[in-house]
Length: 293
Image (tube, rainbow, N blue to C red; front, side, top):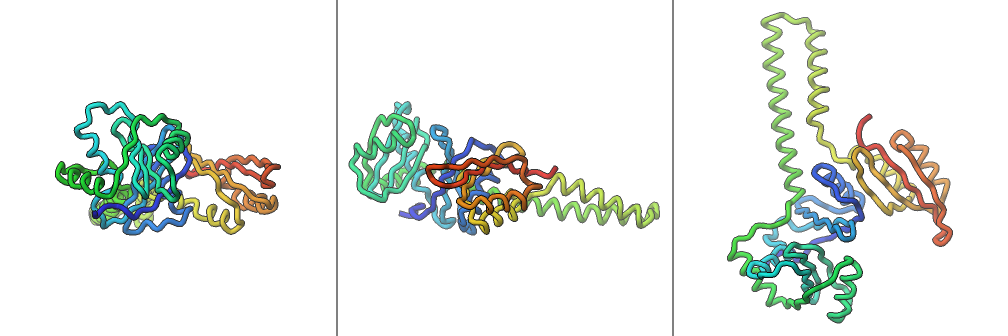
């Protein structure tokens, strides 16, 4: 079976994001957790029931995503208004109303009922049906998946990133060529003074940069995250909200926290520090500017 049977999963708590904010959040989260995304496919699933993102980092050379092929189960199913739990010896996954909801690897032994209770408590749902799928059953699903010529329900964010970069390069080259021919024409026709020409080009470049600039948030805030790591400040939560980023972290050393806040005060909009008596740590919540002001 040539599917994505080897992939990594990252789960992150967050409000639901869209378009560029979601893409920035995904790549920043992978960056902070030291994921290698070169030559990988990146699939994203948001779970509304628990306000959490599941990010799948998969082998780019594999053909099928094992989560996707379970869609075949619903091709001939009349009643889609159910929540179904599919159990294999090495993983389980949940579909809600015929749409994928959650996946998790199984690393310890569970009875069917124990796993059902675990899933219901974790996802705040009620399981209607439980299906046991052995490897042979999964291979039959794969055959039907191929036969029905189904395409993946997941969008590869890494591919979207590459395509956007190609478009960016195309417009960059087009703009440069356009500027070269345009200003050469202006120089020969009107004999524009060199200073005026350079000033105009500079203004055009500034406008172009503002419109087409393409940087991920982790690039803009690279120094901030390196500072967090160097001071051994543990990141507990990361959220995007319009033009701001919410970061929550903990440390036992209050001086390290003040050092971080002082070093990055130009990036930090506000901060709150609370001492957790039970765990003997300082909890910090900061709002960080993620756009140029």
